Every structure is written in structure tokens, then in C-alpha cells.
Length: 333
Ligand SMILES: [Mn+2]
Image 1 (cartoon, helix red, strand yellow):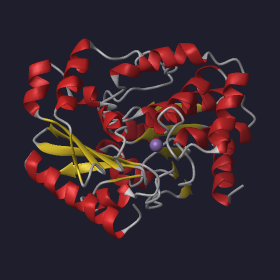
Image 2: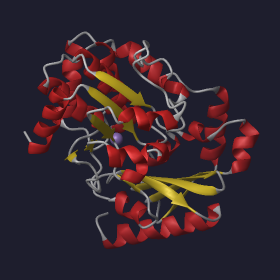
Image 3: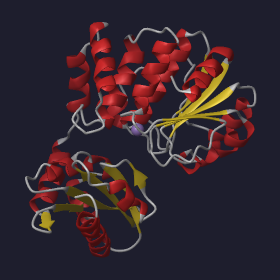
Image 4: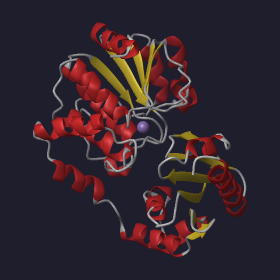
């Protein structure tokens, strides 16, 4: 076991009051890990405040168990979180590669508290007082599962739900190359413990509205490819959101349809959001899209990354396609 993991376990065992958060615009791994930590700490009889970062729990996860008895606090008034945190023993920050990924209002806590940084982003800047960072892990959920096992807490109930959500979403339901033997062993253990897989998958996967399907259909009908089909591109203009009465959250999974095209090595999706262009990159195997996103100050993982570009959709598409072409030609395609 790594020394850092051991030290995190000690800090949890020795502490009594914890503040916990994840990155802004929380995804399945962030939300799932927060829920898992909440229930893990509750089972250990610790006091725990969860700060769900901006803009809150995505609608599709509203049904998860956030504690329900006043021990979990949504981010309604960020200003009240930090003063309270002075009395806490540790500030757990999960799934954040850099301190900037922590919500603005919580930044002072990074200075005033003992920070435990638990993450799997390869470019993590080790901003914590303790840093357990392992890029070999599929998700933070997988890391929290290991902590729970180390601490002798069984992977059941709402804890297991959070872990499964985190691992399933960060691995594309156990299909991406980050899915490791350990990911599957933990999942097996969760199922052995009586977890209702069908119930959870139904809730996770039965989420689309008809408007979302219309948006995706229109966007997909305009998808195109470059470099003899090695690069697939899909884009969503502001006008498309207006026409189908949808929002950015309805673009989820769109990129996976492009990644599924036979010849595609790298899938690119672009959308107009808040006056800038948000992009995502997905690749197969060796093609490192994290380094491409980094050229535009983005981040992520080798096979899944993203970021933002200022300017028009056309300009952003041109920049990204040319960066991907260079990477495929010079590198590891
Ligand atoms: Mn993650």
C-alpha cells in the first residue's frame, strides 16, 4: 500500500469532523465519490459536511441518497462553509487535478484547513497537505472503495451506490481502457454484497427526453470526418439548443456515437456554451488526447479530455482538428 494512502487512512481514523468537496460542474465520479465518502464517514461515526460544488447535483442524479438528515449540505450559501470549516480536522478534495477546480468560495479552506487530496488525474499538482494521486485508478470512486475496505467498512447500501455510479461513469460502463482488474473486482464485491445492478442501471440509463433525442439526431446528421476518417467531429450550435429546447447537459454521450465510427481514432465534440466553445476529445488506445487538451489549457485523461476555446465554432474546429492531426502523425496513433 502506498504511504500516501496509509496517511489518508490515518487522517480519517484520527479526525472527527470532515469537510468534503469535488470539482465544479460535478460529473458521475465527483457526485458518486461525494456520496460514497458521506456514507463511509457516517458509518465510521464521523461528522461530515459535503459541499456539492456549483451548479449542484445534476438532475439525473437527484434520486441518490445524500444523507437526508441534515448531515449533508448542498452549496446554498458558500460563505457559511468556510467559517464552519475552521473547526474541521480535514478538508477532503476529490477528483480535482488542480486547486482551481475547487469552487471559488471554498478556496480559502485550501489555506486554512488540512487538505487531503484524493485524485486520479495524471497532471495533479499535489496541492494538498496529503496527496494520494494514482493515475492508474479508473476513478476516484475506485480509490474510495479501497479506503472503505482498508477501514473495514462493507461496500453496501448508499455507499455502494455512490461507488458504482463513480466507477461506471468514469469507465463508460466498464468499457474504456482505464477499466482495470481492480475496478471489476470491486464491482464484483459490490454485487456479491447484494447490490441491485438492474435498478441502478435503469436509473442511470433511462434519462433521455425526446428533446434530447431530437438534438442529438440533428447534431449527428451533420457529423463529419477528417484524415481518411481517423478524426470524427460533431458540433452543437447555440441555434440547435434553441430549436430543440435543450441545454448543454443534453449533449452527454454524443461524442461516444462519433467514437464508435469504424475508422475513428479520435472523436471531437464542440458546443457553443456561455459565449465560448466547450470541447471534448475521446480516443482509442494509444492516442493521448490529454496532451492535445493541454495545448488549450484543458485537462483530463489519456483517452478522455476537454477544455474551452474562445472564438467561433469554425475556428475552434480547425484548431482542434489540426492539433489532432499533428498528434496522430507525430506520435502515437
Ligand atoms: Mn474522475
